[in-house]
Image 1 (cartoon, one colour):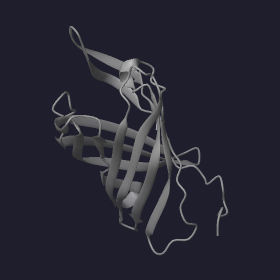
Image 2 (image 1 turned 180 degrees about the horizontal axis):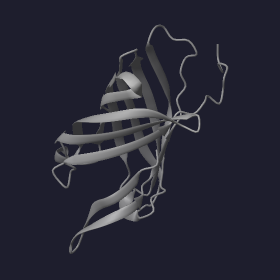
Image 3 (image 1 turned 90 degrees about the vertical axis):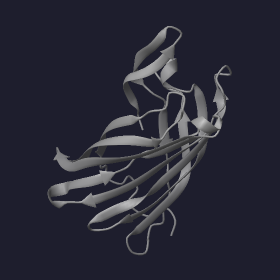
Image 4 (image 1 turned 30 degrees about the horizontal axis):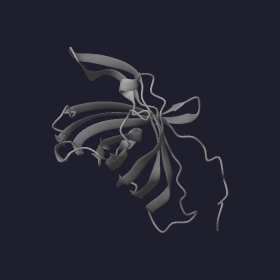
Length: 195
């Protein structure tokens, strides 16, 4: 994931400023069984966050790693499931607080004719190092998406709006607008690694 921020509010000594740029990059690598029963799929593996933010305010300046998993139902009319990840910091800027945080993306999508879909895929976040009033962000939302073919490559575009019904007391987000572009790449490994 390559987060790009536009107009992210940052508290400065003389008020709020807006910051634009690239955030910390996250990478997840999941292994799943070659054969599954029915429409249920799952996978497990490691996840990482790299301190790549273009500005200090847009990242945590920490190298982080932890476990990830996904479980989902992939039906003809519905897709739903959850994608939890957790990270602990193990290196980085010593002036910044160490991290222990989770991100749980839950999703439910209704598949419609002509490659359209409607639903939501917000991210619950938990900062285990924050005080009790600032640990949890719990959003709900609604979005619409469509799959296009661009030069023969399927690419999914999704626009969503989320409202955080629970959010940190100190500068927690209320609303979030997310635009996602996901190219559907062919499998690099065609045959199962393990039988």
